[in-house]
Image 1 (cartoon, one colour):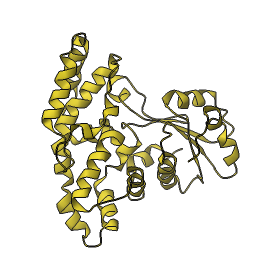
Image 2 (cartoon, helix red, strand yellow):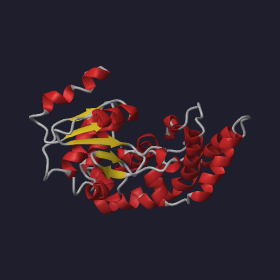
Image 3 (cartoon, one colour):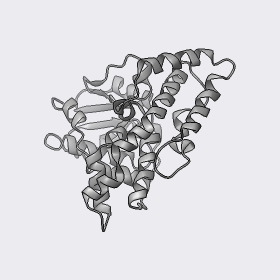
Length: 275
């Protein structure tokens, strides 16, 4: 994979003008991210625009800078993750001009779609059909087994974000909190992490804000799918769950792309219907 400089990333779109009807700019520069976004937005906008390349810029500020500096001669779409801003700040989610702020933590949250997951597993399995997979996956049971603990954890992370906490939070990832192979986090590990942070001297404001966020947000499937990081938590846990049914040997970024080809993206399609 080519590693582009920041300057090159901001100018590479010039070389794709004859191949793209719309130029799409994203935060994520990780391996596989450009292809993931391309798969999803080719699907959503397939009847309107040709998209042969998406442009990763390397972070939220870089996307906002390009959005503010961009010349409107071409059709453009700048995309920002919702992140913890959704819990902490008043965010003008959705499409505004040509800036799309996702109403979920990140794009990967849209891959948590039961039918798409089952279809992907079905394609990879030589023996199981869709109804077998539904029985073994127990999708809603998986969500309910995680949602209570992850609601508390992400309310804590929101409090940390609001108070400029310098320790690691979302980037720790889900696997720090698992003890089994069923894709469900450990209540004991989550409670230990919460207590460790809120009981530390100097974190009194974090503790107070944590309680406020927890009182405001209920433990629901909607919280789980919307506010918990799809990239760092939901997909790693889902991969563990899937491996109980059918062992998948491909990397996480390939899993994302396979799911993207099966999911419907109804919410994103509705937001972009007039784009």
